[in-house]
Length: 323
Length: 289
Image (cartoon, rainbow over all chains, first blue to last red):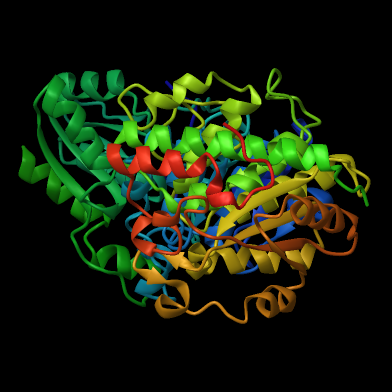
């Protein structure tokens, strides 16, 4: 079994923002490889690039509020041998600069790393303009792009270090709010590898595939369902693309039913990617937890997740309906 | 400042003529593609690949080379034709332009033709990439780097807001190792630039963004070379050369008419154009054939 935080099910489980792990990881990646450079669009503290900027002032570039140019500048830097990270809110990068990412970065096959912070409705009070629920869909359709959705700050740190070592254009999706620490320093992380984070004592009848900020809710749902005598397995799909096809198909074969859980539009998101695999390789009954073709709004993160149907109760309900 | 000898000017003009012929022949064969822009930029491309640019066609990834980013990728027939004549690939490969399986894609794609510095076509994105290259050049080699990053832009694409983002950034960073060349031919697909989206006063706009501005006749070899020399000697800011060009230059039928922006000549029009090119209507010093 994969080592996870022993306090995972405690009420006082430690919490940290996923974006904070990125900030730590970028500094470590910068120490490991002098080719790593970073650019931010006037959100340096908010996207947690500030530590890198402080340690490597010459390798950090303040771009001002120009997401489109940042993607293209990064492509030019990569053409000169650098490994550039560009950060902003997911709504603006990859939201606003999608075509620059598609053509200047992916079509050109440049190892630029796009860091989208503040993804999902859990951004909270800022409201719907700032709540990116479309970014997984936007990035995963681009050829060559790798899409990573860390489930906690520790995984985000490991993912950042790992993505700095590849030659692939990569998108990493971060969240603003503090979320529970699920993994430990010893939890392995590998791009493209899904991991089983929960397995009930009773035989599983449903597989729950979750990513990013909602992996915790999925695990809690699995645990509570176990109390009701409903067995499940929770898979953390840290890399949405390339997806771990073998793990997804094996889970579907074992359980016979799949629920996907993501803080993103159901259309085009991680669940869609799972469905694309299962429809062709092992047709399986599915349910999708995510935003249902709606925009976000202001509110507290927890109440927004409830309002848009992404709470623990919604996951449990989806499982019960499917069985 | 180095002055061009008459022999060199003659050599470059003859080379530009050959390149124009290759462009027309390729467009006729391709049956699609852009005519006006490539012919209008033939002199500047020739001056760069046969005199200005530090490059090695036999070693395209040479680290010390200058970088040339073509932002308005649709004029790639002139890029391809010039690179072919410079020795990057056989001139006869121009006959594959825009055909299935070709390395010479309708808009440049470096996956197919790796000697390109970048892929391009979607407008307004080249200058930002050139800025990225210039920033890294300075980061890695300091103020005294002897590499120069050049970016060729169309005037129509200056409608794109991203160009001005890049202009602002280059101005902020005082990137003296960056030289932009704007093909000021006054046309874009829907008509004349000043009717579609006025650009003037264009020189003042660049100056206001922190650039050193030069304006030249884009068909005068000596003026092209002199302007680049001047631009490279400016050490406190990036430079832009606004090159006034005649779209379709060299063939009366193509000149000045925006309809030739995005259309190729047919076989007969191509033959007429080639006949006219041989003398360039008497406009060039070195008529031959």
